[in-house]
Amino acid sequence: MKNNFSGIIANDELCSYFANAIESSTLSHAYILLGAKGTGKHTLARLVAAALSCESRDNETTPLPCLECNNCNKIMNCISPDVMYISREEDKATLGVDAIRFIKEDVAFFPNDSSFKVYIIEDAHTMTAQAQNAFLLTLEEPPEYAIFILLCEHTESILETIKSRAPILRMKMPKRDEAMGFLKSNYPSARTFISNSPEEFEQIYMASGGSIGRILELIGSSEKKQILQNRELAQKLIESIAHNRLSSDFAEICTMFSQKRDEREKIVAQFSEIQRAARDLITIKKSDEPNLIFFTDFQYAEELSYGISVKKLMEISESTERARLALLRNANVKLTVTNYLSELI
Image 1: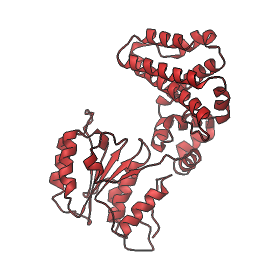
Image 2: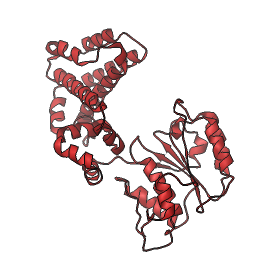
Image 3: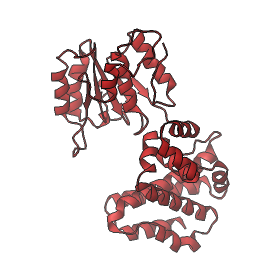
Image 4: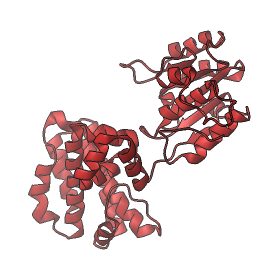
């Protein structure tokens, strides 16, 4: 049977894994879907739930999930009583024990429309230790019909006892051409943007880390302008150092930094872009197959790397991190930026 995990790109092996596990009834009771924001974790979790409940699941001539039956439509539209989304409260930084207690109570009831109940735990990496221990009690002896999918951006905070019971499956980021092709085929507004502003798209692709969700968010957001300005600043600074003209460019670069006290977060973001740019040049100098996360033009980045030693690039990265942390600790904005640039001369 052909799997129909549409809307997921760069993760064919993962989609095939789930399709085969569902068809052969070898699906685990729990999985950790690991990936950055916007990589398709939510979409894949819904598609897995739809495939489990698809009314055409046993029809070998129909794609899995069919995305046309009543169960599929309910799940993909997030109105199925058998698919629960567990998330933290809007004003909370963590996912607390109350949400997990709901799972413990709800899992005792049989499914309504199908043979399975799927619990999609969003931002599972924010679960408190108390919440994780409470969840573990359910995970140790789950009913046959219960499937738990934990969506995580990282797993450092997840207890080993949970990770031992939930295989970690990593979502891959799409390559540039994959992302561009997918956006052009599925999103008219993105297709227009790519056609009209190809250079901006390249910038946004790098700034997003290849995340489809983040690209779409930025294309139609006022945040796009600030991100492009942050990247311009980072490139200007690295160019000035590479060409040994930071002293003469000092005043201009100072003015490119946000100077207002209430824009502290913007400057922190600017420092992060500088670190990404320095990281690229270090990678170019030390790796035979560098994977760039800032520069859109490899040849140009390589030319810049010739003008800065690895030692200097490490100093740039370390100075930038010190300045970034100082701002997070509420240091004076203007003084921090001035001292930072002075260190680099």
